[in-house]
Length: 360
Ligand SMILES: *Cc1c(COP(=O)(O)O)cnc(C)c1O
Image 1: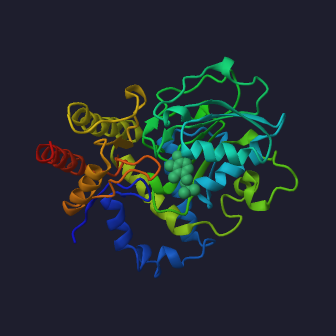
Image 2: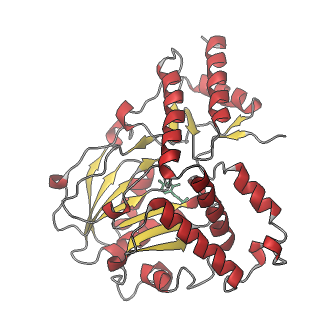
Image 3: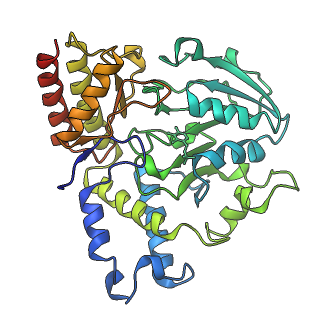
């Protein structure tokens, strides 16, 4: 089989040039006689790989010097625990905005560690919109406010950054990391699992303001203390070496595309093209409130389970794969991460039009 257009929500499609470069260097990385997978993480060759990855990421996101960049394991899910463990440092209170499954899981995990409140939730409407909150909606003595900037499963995104009235803002950016421009200074902490937009599963990137390090309780398990990782340059223990290497190649690819702003513009064009087809269709519809639509994960349905299944199956035969919606939502979901080529979006649109004609 040739390479397909892979609309998976994660792990997901990666830029072809990244895969090709990794393939070319797989057995013998730049003449050093071994694969990146076989290198000591303490070797100079590997130190160069991780240093370059961090420098490129700092460049792409304009990360200020008073922020640490960490390459960790444990996925987004471990961050659900690490964030409260490390950031509940004064009153033990935090306010969460619950906009989907991942935000709700993060909230539930945090309740193990402190006085955690749901500031707002759109669950009663099936998470089809994002609450608009301002400073008055948060407890003024909260240690932090928590958001999920892009909701992978429901296909929504924040089209604004909440004014927290000076309370620290922590964000899960797993599914729109490096896909939209953010001012890192607006956040105390940003994290993202790599497997949505950056690389293979196995590495989670944390960007944290340095003054927030060192406040975890004394009995915090060593791996869960951000300060340990920051002090050791993400080398307290063996890091996910190969995943960091691929993420680094993706950072270089993004730079070649013109950086995050150019990528964001391209993502918006692709998503707009697809939503326009859905909006003009008499067969498909998008359940998400228009102003909160994700540019990454486009959720749509025919409203008929059988027809949805037929769509997913026939699309697969055309090399358009992983279009089935998340089991908790049903319908379809097309994930248009940074690496999705225009040809993939165009092929999907053309198939949707054919399918509509054949199934009216
Ligand atoms: C996928 C995802 C997670 C969970 O990531 P894991 O690495 O599987 O733990 C968390 N948050 C968001 C927004 C996600 O898309």
